[in-house]
Image (cartoon, rainbow over all chains, first blue to last red; front, side, top):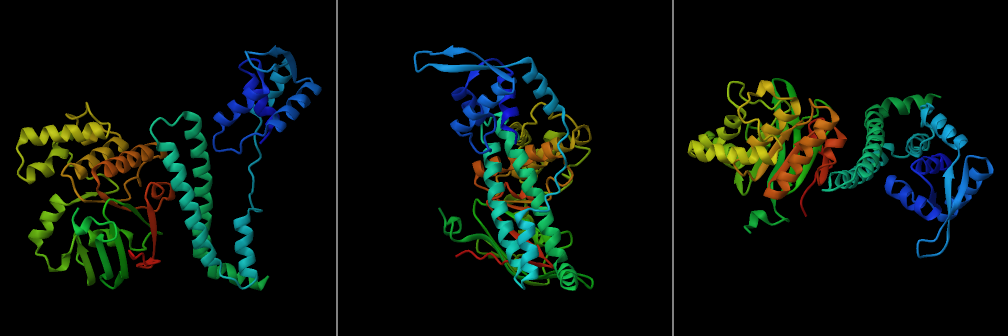
Length: 177
Length: 232
């Protein structure tokens, strides 16, 4: 994920300081890893260096003085370019689950047992996410984030189900290679 | 709480079920435990025996071999009259296509199990309306099933399955014909209603996102449940 573009997106609604940007990021992307403060400030400095953001003054608001940032016209244009860009469909063939199944086959392990255990772990996570998104009062960001994670876990599970069904055939292919 | 509602004692239990349709085996020694109040997903590929297992557990189909016990009663030892009574009072069933009666209104479809159980028309209609409201289809009581969307029809079918206050709801691919958002509405409604009423749910599905509404999952393959889940 591009932190600089996410911060530019958060700045699109108006000037903001680093603490507020971190808080809003964590609210809008609730299932993502929380942003570290250091990463927020480093990214803001780089946006200023590249002419995509600029300092808008300071805001004390009864507490310590904080530097406010705003997006520049170049920053807004960069955000629009990034947001409209097509993300390359990732092949995901380097996924750890895929690698472990192939290694289990190569090393004479028990890929079927691994797939059963991995399925149980995936289903446990999917139950947690389903509870999160169907909880009364769940906000839109939480629901969208849980939907995204659920759909990807579901894709993993479909592959694991197909692989479990193919295992005999797949093992013969790998052995022959 | 009766001994059958103790979480450690399965409410519904099957052991060694076999069933063949002609020379085609559908179940080959399947076993399963459903505890009171839990939602249990039975998943597996097409043809693995999920629906046949559900039909045997609900007393709709008699297995060739094996036992099904519900709250201490062995279903195989019960006459058809008693099985019919259980299906009307203790069990609720929902299929992939709601199987609502097209000639009846939405309200009468939901009230039907109550009317068959001897409840008066006014009371049955009022209780049907309550359940339709819980499933978010209030205001459409006078429509016919053909005038509903797939998701609405399935929620009406759920209301019909739960209106008698069953202890077990059997749901066979309840989201199989629905898009993802309609599936979410149906499953959220089913899970919430089951938890509020304390009903156990046996949920047959091939869809992992639907199975994720359950408390736990067992897998079926080639007519057996793997691994066999036995209550400790």
